[in-house]
Length: 198
Image (cartoon, rainbow, N blue to C red):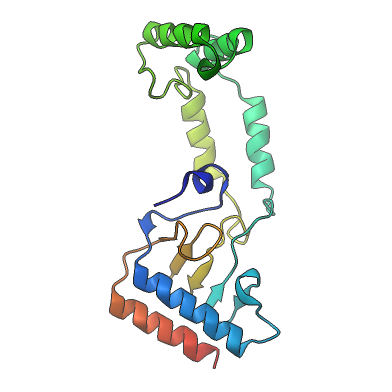
């Protein structure tokens, strides 16, 4: 399961929870790397890559490919329409504060949701009644991070099987995987990775 902090501020994650046997194997592979690559791999803060696999630490840095700057620019240059729920919501928040700080704001936002026939309280901060969301989805469908940007690179990647594992801060914390993987298939991948660094 993806943690809230990762979902809001974190790097890429996959759609499936990572099986415990894969997490255990990644811990073992990390310890094996630390023993075999002494001086070259210092635990969870270094990158390792060979022809078989790559292991990378959780990335704390900024986007390296320019996508995030382009995303911000799109957001600054594409506004909601004047009639949109979001525009009216911003006016209420500007005049009266956020709903969780002010009972008057809460009442006005509830009325605004009713006016636009939208749910309240679920979704009341993100509803959109103009084309902004569909324009955003169209833009994002053809724009993304470069595959070499560390924001999207998997923390573990097995090249032959196209297996990708992402985690939040360290293995075992909000660890996700890009495909279903049985124990025996994982064992083959793990063995190939170990052999590649002996």
